[in-house]
Image (cartoon, rainbow, N blue to C red):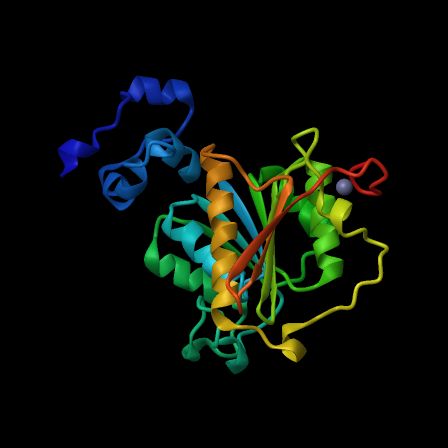
Amino acid sequence: MRATLSVPCDHDAQAACGSPPVNDEQLLRYSRHLMLDAIAIEGQRRILASHALIIGAGGLGSPAALYLGTAGVGRITLVDPDSVDLTNLQRQIAHNLARVGQPKAESAAQTLRSNNPDLQLQALVQRADAALLDELLPSTDVVLDCTDNFRTRQLINAACVRHRKPLVSGAATGFDGQVSVYDTRRGDAPCYACLFPPDAAYEEVACSTMGVFAPLVGIIGSVQAAEALKLLAGAGTSLAGRLLMLDALSMRWDEITLRRQSGCPVCG
Ligand SMILES: [Zn+2]
């Protein structure tokens, strides 16, 4: 089997392209990615060399973190101030009954480590604020917003615009989900605030009062993982400039085109 997984560049070439060498175990572990033309060895090397910041280790953060970890994102930082509660276990699949009461960031890191001991994991038991984001973003390649409150979403978006980092944003409540990529490295691509102005009065809809369909967060969080991995590997076309909306009761997806707003207070 290993003969079919030969690396198409020698060690000198690897040094020249700047990516870390891939060892035999990694060739096996990631073989199903290496078989994909859009990822292959170069894309997997980029994934292994990258740093993802996941904010929120709940319903969306669980599947997003699990897939980034199993797929070999070399460095993952998880940020969440909350602890695991019995009511979380219905949908937050990175946690388990034995970890009720433990910080979610540490519980999720423990699950990721048990699948893939090579990962560099950092679990931060705190709320993401502007100071923390300014500290973390310079070394981050992609940011995943897996939070559930509007104020934090705006802080994350503003930091991503400031540091020119791609933001993969998901939201889920009831049976309704939304997901997009806000990548202001692209001149025409909108930021989150182009769509949801920071000063607008939105009714905060928390899943603690509204309820949330368990697999909905799995679907949306998995799309976030897919978009993050594509951005890291340089594969395909991202969701930048498009918002996907899911009604899971009818299992119908809609897509709308998003445009940068010249008067946006964040990126305009
Ligand atoms: Zn904007």
